[in-house]
Length: 531
Ligand SMILES: C[S@@+](CC[C@H](N)C(=O)[O-])C[C@H]1O[C@@H](n2cnc3c(N)ncnc32)[C@H](O)[C@@H]1O
Image (tube, rainbow, N blue to C red):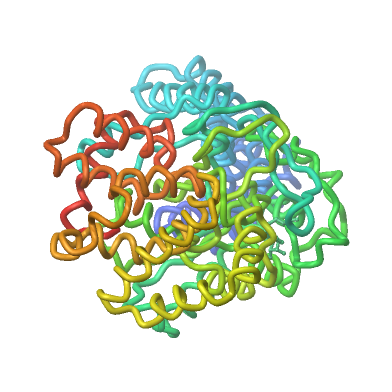
């Protein structure tokens, strides 16, 4: 027996040393040996029981560092079952932290509460900190009451605010407009209302000098693939969610139960399907269809100091949102989280869509971009412009030619000609908005140049009119909102002008941002004239 106890001591010392050195895999190995030794001698002495309990707690810690959450939780539960004083708190703390990172806020909170009751003496500050965090996140995830204004107003100091997973008034259904499934509003909502907040499964990042920097793009992509594969290997819930996403064969895809995407969801490990093992080829297909670049405009603004720092990621629930060139929703990137809000008023039952690419472009360019995603957009705006292009081929060709030539003079010509023909064709306001959105690059070139404005300004509508009409057609967009703000500022920033800009800003930034923070953000880039 003494020999066995000595062996136990040796394994214990070795494993804790490895744990301290953060050599997780090796420490798991040794703890596994220690566990089997203790299990064999469990009945002979209480020392083995204490050691077994501690070994499970510590192996849980090491497993959780490798994000092997389900097996880490199994270890915590075993330690809790053995219930040896002291280690009990350790296992509860570890389990709580894992549940917190799996967005199971109330279950995490229960663990921290139990631990704080058991903790005798010592500082309970950490536990109270965790309990406070759980409470805050649980409230956010239940009510959708998010506010990132303070962080914005503090100049993005420190880490981005921690945001809870939130599933608002949305549901997945078969889509009529896009292929496969889509996300739909379950009730009528107004512009700026938050629809969901979701943390990335993973984000691949790299410094990209320009759009053609292929090696950096490859690094970013490989980083994403490895992280997603590893996340789906270690967490059955993540795998189940990832496997609900499209592989690019819409006809074969079922509508998953919304329950699967709610924050407190947990699959019963026993019931996790045997055949649900991550397969690299399926994961690659899924990433091909669903991964998104961090939206350039918002990622750049919301806390990124280095503007060439690019990221491509996978955000599960957001992956059910189809594209439209006249979208009604917007995404914002705050740290690793994506929030999606209505960029216009949305009716109950309406499909929620956002833009996969810049939609302030003519039909031909948008078609090219959509074809890179493997679909052709059939939204209201694309259908309308297709008819215009067919029926008014000659005039549209002239406008297109001016656009492609790209000179300042040509831009003036493009805009004046476009406004003339739209008057002649007696287009409705909404239709004018569609066309103006398509030729926005020409409008914005004129609006941002005093010289061009003095030459063409009297022959085209005012910047605010164009900005409002475009925003009406495609929802809030930072380039468009900035024009409204710049105009407001030029006129001395009067209340009415700023109110208008703020209304448009609400569509772009959503209600997670108070007016003051939105104003700070909008003014930030005005001087760069990045519209
Ligand atoms: C991120 S997924 C969107 C959700 C997907 N429809 C599903 O069933 O899971 C992207 C894929 O959806 C389809 N899609 C998205 N927007 C579309 C649109 N406007 N028209 C047709 N297909 C679209 C394309 O097949 C695209 O590759």
